[in-house]
Image (cartoon, rainbow over all chains, first blue to last red; front, side, top):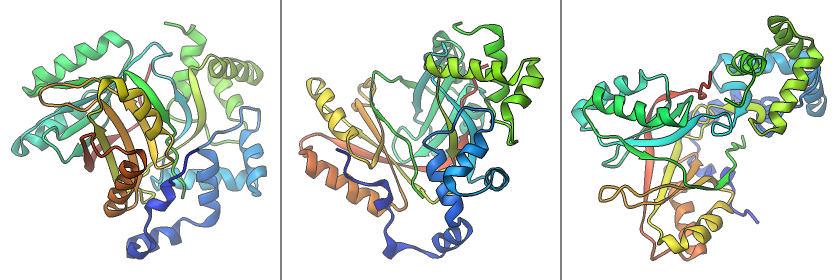
Length: 172
Length: 158
């Protein structure tokens, strides 16, 4: 039983102007597309037609709306999600403690590595958190050493030991 | 590598996204010199073997208003990680829940979960509710909100 809802993380009382503007831009059909297609997409000859049918719109409209949402960056990608480990690749979460005065420069150095998939600043002594995705598991250690050598700061490697839940889904 | 040459080519052709056209697999097939039906067969095989978890869209959650993105980390006694991890993972508000190694002395936390919300106050309330509901008052935790996002892209594999 899963009982607290991500959607409830929105507090209507605190909804500000930018929320209202965004809601106006994101109309009901776009919302239905986002909510449904995060769950999956048919694998068949005319997948857009099949998905459009269950949304009650035409194939052309679905394709145009997806294109528009990719163009204005509400969507990052439309396609496959791979299982990194089964593809034979390496995946890990890494963190660094970088002094404020060096932070921007180190962020640029770290992001230059093509293996860095995403990188967030977080408010903690360990203030830079990024995901490494490499072609082989062995490459993780090599890239870590390269990042340490390039930046001069230690990298803490925290690969997943056990997965309890993955259900990244954003209801809009 | 668990992939043959054609599969590697297919994966690299679609990893940036599926063509937004009526017959996307026929379009991919033209680039690979393969029939639409054979491409579909390959895609289904990759999915059955679990190499492709799913097809679908990946949102930029920040642009959709999920700007309060909290990584909540817990220092759970090793013999309780399983039960606490499973309990947290059952809550809808928890979008990811993983056990990871501690990095002592700097980092004592071994259980990580993500909570995405639209404002920080509400996310903190949700975390209080989690502590209360699951009886986690004795388990130290910290909330790391994300500040700036420097980079977000899908991982590239080939």
